[in-house]
Image (cartoon, rainbow, N blue to C red; front, side, top):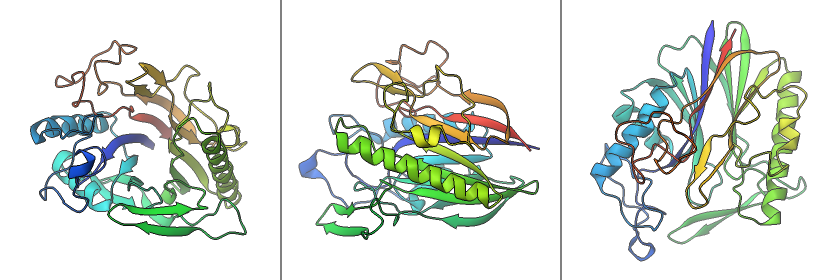
Length: 317
């Protein structure tokens, strides 16, 4: 029995006008788009991208997903479960049957989620959220509303969530741990925060293994180990392994014309990984580090599937 597992940061999959879609002074934070629509990634300058371009863009996002043939898909940067269901129906032709997402801690509303292919030979056993796990154990996680904006969260270790989902297949319990770590912003505090996130995930891996489960850590961990050591605890956890080559890259940053590895799938060491794959066909044509085929409608800007690449493994059970 083979299982295809994919992770993909779909880059700001929203169903409302928000951060990148309109100039700041014109934003309406509660204005939803039409029932079957999703909002575009939008220009980095903040101007509105037309809906025809958005359609091209999100069809490329969908094609990048479908081409990896996932049984399980971990997603990052999704606004909510409503948006994920619309995207599955409108752009993926209901490829996925089950969708799991819990609103997390991010100020601009980007969450992590899990999708399970229709007809996949597995069952969902348990779901756990860690949005209330504190950085400092003796202090509570607090939230403060900000008018017309959202809310800020203090003392939460996870910037979004570490969403745990137990899946039963072939007599084994696979514990998916979907993450989107603290972003790189050049601040020492962010590196410290990301280090604590890696340490907490590593502890969850240890607990799952002790319970007889097979943990798989996946998602956007937001840093390349060649330039930053904040992921050390999870990358060096004794129960996990990294099946991808050392020169792997999964992300293209346009302003710096830079490739890096931000996306990971780290399965339990006793799981048999038979194949790894990174789909770069949805990257902007500005990403000249990739010289392979692209989807026909991909251009220099606004039409890319994401700035990240779907990253996949095949596991044989």
